[in-house]
Amino acid sequence: MNGTDLVILGGGPGGYACAFRAAQLGLSVVLVERDKLGGTCLHRGCIPTKALLHTAEVADTAREGVRIGVKSSLAGIDLGAVGAYKDSVVDRLRQGLRSLADAHRITFVKGTGALVAPGTVEVDGRRCAGRHVVLATGSYARSLPGVDPGGPVVTSDQALALTSVPDRVIVLGGGVIGVEFTSLWRSFGAEVTIVEALPGLLATEDTYAAKQLARAFRRRGIKVKTKARVATVDRTAPDGVSVTLESGDVLSADLLLIAVGRAPNTVGHGYEESGVALDRGFVVTDDRLRTSLPGVRAVGDLVSGPQLAHRGFQHGIFVAEDIAGLDPSPVQDTAIPRVTYCTPEVASIGLTEHAATDAYGTVETVTYDLAGNGRSQILGASGGIKLIRAPHGAIVGVTMVGDRVGELIGEAQVILGTGATAKDLASLVHAHPTQNEALGEALLAMAGKPLHAHA
Image 1 (tube, helix red, strand yellow):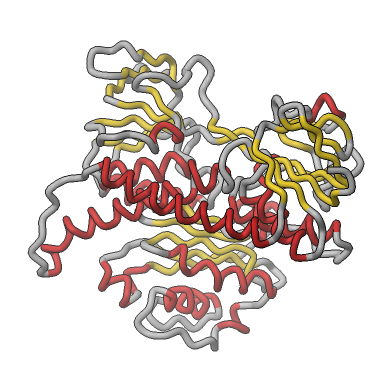
Image 2 (spheres, helix red, strand yellow; image 1 turned 180 degrees about the vertical axis):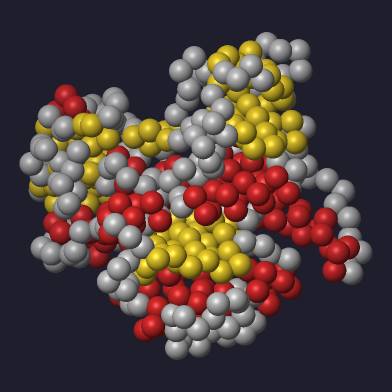
């Protein structure tokens, strides 16, 4: 394979996006993947978890029908059938990706690859050489020291393969993975306790979101324990698993989910041995995603920052265009939207109030309660929207909490991307009644002329 323009190690969002865009630009591409095209996102992350969360939403709708006059009942959750539905969605998307790879004439090499020199990747004894190499091996589910998966203790990977709904679950970790599984299991009928060592859930989000979500979870009957650290885990307990916290509290459940985040998958791929600099396991890159090794780039979860599939997509596209000489603008993490698909959803972009205050010294904030939004009242949705304005007038952060607010994040991205002020945006007309109108109401409030809210 001498003379190849680009060898990509990893076929997840960052890797296949880079491969597709490079091929579109006329570059020859070899894509190495040890498993299936699509990576963690398609097979163990974004897609399967959101399929489960959709099932959870349908279950909640069935329960709530009586509130709006629809006589319905929920007979139960057939997790085997749910799993078949989930797998069918994943399989269709996987086939679509493979069809696209074939259409782009990308050479697909299945096997475990390792970087052995600048421009050279070895795959199970076979060498693939290229002018450029892109590292895109993604991440894996972390575990806690002394709490390895096994028996009633699982990571998110194993949780996706469960064939029955546990009666009681303890979730260790209040980040995105933890709150999403907490939400879906509660909708499936389980009793759930979520344990987080930090002061609030979703620690990387604005505290407004953390407080709103914790309140909503408690209304749903979810037990939320923050500032709580694990002392011991006993998986031999007669009723499943027992967790003792440093406070002395003892929690018991049928299942314990370890959801303490994901770590970069850099071990065993020859990175450090070949001279690629690492920091806390992440690959060190500059703003053009170049590593310390000439001709080698890194994308996605390998690079410190938000571990999001769409960040990986953008990294991959950027690297392909940069190698092709198009001189694209570097990817900015603050311009990447974030969505947590629990009930209620949390969606945000830009800076939190704390980060904005650090950056600008002083900021102005406005919050709008979804109780004033007609569509939200029809849907029974609760939550709100928070806008953050810097001293120069531009909105630098948006946080939203509520049912399906993830679908509103596109407009918020345009707001931040254009540097527009509330005054500029207050004249935009939003259809009534929509939840999108709530963002318009928040903009009106920030412009000093609230309509369905108190001044």
